[in-house]
Image 1 (tube, protein in one colour):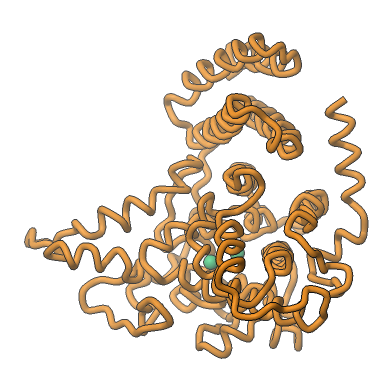
Image 2 (cartoon, helix red, strand yellow):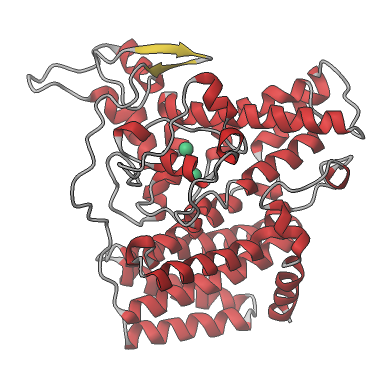
Length: 450
Ligand SMILES: [Zn+2]
Ligand SMILES: [Zn+2]
């Protein structure tokens, strides 16, 4: 029953109208809502198209013979990160929306009419400017980088990279979202925030070349490839969401170089598919370890309590002697390429071997978690907290264990057996027969093949 309902929803969402949302091809009239509750779940509406386009892109890459265009472990990790981020939007509302509504309710400066194309256009521009500032802050303002580095942690650049999002990034951008709340009504803000996010899906591809005059105003695959590059010329460039004009205005624009194609990933790649580690390791480094670094002589690099606090908010690549200047509320490096190593001649991506049995097993668990997730989305607001918590625990632990298999972690199999045993007990306790079938099958498969 649930399977056929999910399939029906999936097919219904593959309407051409929903495809237009991917490119912001909408009119003010059709996307004006009077309450935040009325604003559609745009991300759910386009998720079918996301999947179709992902598959199409992989087919094209495969036919063209660009073997280096994607990897199974990387793609699953990216989609898992997107799913993880959506899971943390408790009750479907983001932290930024809750704050936004409070500030708008109590401190708004004007009452802009919702039923007006002018308001819609102002909201579009302010949202895009707010996104630019927020995106720049989560790159440059020290520990704020920890909220966002996950999005840059893939060494590949394809549509699945768009889904690789920081699980708690919303907390890092809340302040910047709220800047518009003095002017823009909440439903208008939410609509543009979602459409702006969705627009950024299609620009994560290597298949689309330079788009000529469009490149002048809009953010495009070419501009965003630079943003994901780890070559010195790419660092901290092209922060735009839908428009690229903010980068041109504030001096962070950099065109893609034909003679030096971007090489993707973090300046120092993490070499792990462990979902929780990938999401949170940088908080520890920037919030604690960096302030305690020492010189070769053993002297502290950042002596004294105040310096240790200061360095938490200075750019991630800042070290004594690095020149910075003030931009808006934070300091930014004068030379963003300073201290960034040149890209090695033969780039070897992190890609540990995975046996066919492991591939099948991890893919099965991934499919199950996707199915549980889409069901959970529909009912999560009505679930008792225990069922809610068990669903969350099941999904997050599945994503975590998949990553551990990808890393060939020595405890992966042991942990997975314990997890499946707990799932079996829970399935019996709640009379959840499909879950019981899946967990028993998984246990047998684990014992037999993995
Ligand atoms: Zn970024
Ligand atoms: Zn991106």
